[in-house]
Length: 246
Ligand code: ZN
Image (cartoon, rainbow, N blue to C red; front, side, top):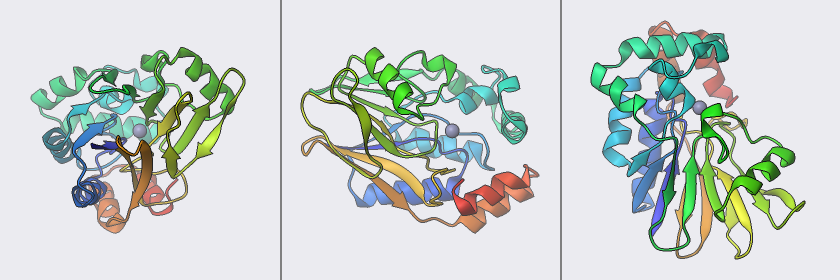
């Protein structure tokens, strides 16, 4: 079984469409979405409906809840707040209700090995913290009871590996072969607003038989997504950053 894991679409329909086509081409059996379907980009409703149509599950991201008033926008920077307020006004009542009911995490407990999916961190996901250092990764591994966890939120693909107390490291940014006895936290990157310096859309493909995860990068029509952001009257910086993947 092959599972496509997508996160941080951020209302970027061009990027989402390209990624879903790539997922189709690679014949993934399931699609799991780790949240932040909306926020920043110009097509929240269309993205939500595409993701709902294709995903087996969707988790809550801070921008999904920010757009519907479930996260305090005082914690958002200027452009994120402006986009969240704009997004809230674009969504239908049924879409707002759907976003506000999304779960913070879910465990894949089908045939072993099971794994956790969460937007931010395994520990206290409602605090929306980032895993950006070995220290933070090590702390999260201590809270994690399962050998594998998929996250989004930082928009930067990375694989953290834990081989025992005090033995935490970066295992890579593109590929993971899962070895028994070790634990892994995989950030699959962002579909709609990458921040690792590579403007291509990012997602993860987890092959359960091979026990490997590949981070795929997909080219999409960045100029079209930028034009829609500018035409919607959203902060121009949200368009500019897409060209640089920052
Ligand atoms: Zn995000």
